[in-house]
Image 1 (cartoon, rainbow, N blue to C red):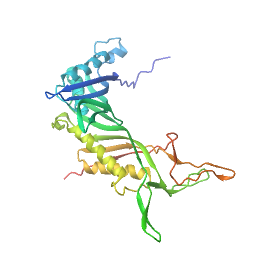
Image 2: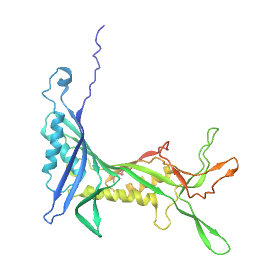
Image 3: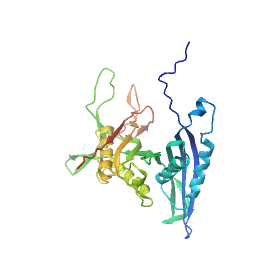
Image 4: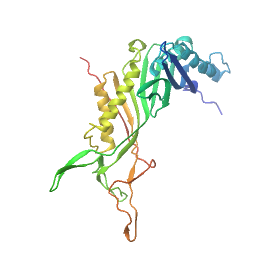
Length: 324
């Protein structure tokens, strides 16, 4: 039987995953800054001979990639954002090795946060936070760039929203609802009741792609992306929760997700698209009853938190700028 080779197409890449590195900077005043990164590297390169002819002469060893992470971290004498480190690392691979055509660097930053003692920021004390800062930098030998930042593990919950005014004989007061879910398709398998009062909890995973398309277009302002990360996260949270005194009603997770993505695009002109994944993590009202009736009377004040099964909601919102 003849070997089928006509129309043969072969694509390959290789890299190193889960390289852990921490970098410590010390100022003259004795203040310390620390970051911890988990780095992944993937290289598109001209090393087909290693697959087809047992010739490894064009391979960048993955152990070399690992060591490069540590060496480049050492070279960063000034504090820098995880985005800038990812770009610098990718630039090294596409410029140092003639065989490499594209470098992809993915980094997850562990959230070490400076602690406060007696109302003062500690000079060299840190505690571990919750949500994680993520980055993907794709750099081509031509200098083309695709940069995406993100957040994962951003757990949020809201319990109330000022919704309607109730009047009795003595005074007026507001009945408060956090979110609801009504008007969905009902069929013979539907058991979920409609409601205008439910707790809304989710763990946000977000990605936002920057509009910078080349290495030369990246902002030169120090810590620009670190500040932008904090700003984007702030907009996402403000949109989710609403004003502090009244909140904002959510008719669905889908509606809230869209408002969060749209607010981000409207606020930051250098962001072209936002992708959000927001599972609906349920808090179920407790009901204890038997054949004789309800044993304990609950008034939507005791819940059973669950994490599975959960609803899965995700969407991507992109903007397109018109040419003047």
